[in-house]
Length: 154
Image (cartoon, rainbow, N blue to C red):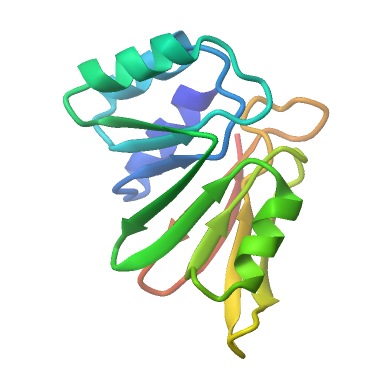
């Protein structure tokens, strides 16, 4: 289902993929390399074989970046923080240091703006569960220029 979501994202114009965790093994990610989009992934609480995830990233020719428990990345001139747990994501959004915080774990898709300590608002986005585990199979297409986020079902 992850491959289906990434393929649909590319067809919709996505230029990169952000995965918010619970990638159990490298074999889940390997088919994504054929899609050709850069993939940023963190592991979440269901950590499988981290050695193979790092190895696949190293062998991916730069298409896969496995960050470990969380990530600080920049895409489309936006500062983005990736973390698996929503409470940690909410806390990071409150700092005002990020344009976008992406989280997972809850399997509940959501998009909201969080007031931050700098007097602004930070986007907090949770794509839900692409695998459809105890919830609809969802993913989010985001436009970083307009900061618009669309929850999509598989």
